[in-house]
Image (cartoon, rainbow, N blue to C red):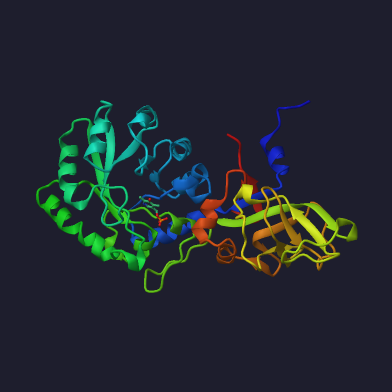
Length: 388
Ligand SMILES: *Cc1c(COP(=O)(O)O)cnc(C)c1O
């Protein structure tokens, strides 16, 4: 028995995978750079394993574009970014606490301080810390309330153990139900003016992620931290900045692992939509264990042999059925496409998002680790994920 298997031969045996186009990430980054101009810092948000695209691989790609700082939430993502770009500044968004102090030190992480109690707990570690202060401008989530911001910044400034790099906010996504971006930023600007007048303004002020960056060029300040836009999963709204992005998640594919002509010996066909007597049925090696939802919208399709075919419910942990009655020439082992294109048939990210009852970010971030990633720097040359 040979157990020293090579990573690429393990991957060759996978029944399902996603394809990530890193050149899309690079070109989306350049599009963002073009609209914010040469002096605004871009701090890409690589949380949730870079929106499902692989934090290490994305960080390495962006480093070649000149990016030197990133934002993440989890230690796992921080570690991947640190390995890929040893000299990067890594901002930990609100999340980790002082129990992670050894990792913060070892990985040289910049932490977020969201309030006075948060600061006191970190100070008990007696470790030198680089920090950003987070302010909550009306998202009702992490961050110090505007009323407490100046005092918190002053406390940070007087602590010898603290190096204060900046202040940031993440603006609300309540839409009609909450304050507008302009109303939120208006809670910050008078404070910034006072800080500036007294020489207490931190070096970096950052409030814009994808949505605000598109709609409000006036809120770029010193830095922006877009996530979704970088992965091509945020749609630029009408009336905002004009920039074209492409999705980094370029395909979701699975192999046909079972194929049969159904007949009477199987008993009556299940009384569910899409089943019929003597149909030709293919089973794909992908299921809700890979992040496909358990319930797909009626009319969901896949592409095999260049043709669209219906997905037949329900989805299982590792299997999905398709009706291939009308595609006689397909074979066991053939690839089926849940997202992507073949010939003139195409399933786009908006289409799969609708079928999965979510949005594009939901598809990209909802895929599980068990769905391996293949990297296509160039669409015709697929490089499979390298093992750790
Ligand atoms: C998620 C997040 C971002 C990125 O948001 P997008 O809408 O994906 O651009 C930026 N900053 C913080 C603090 C976040 O939590």
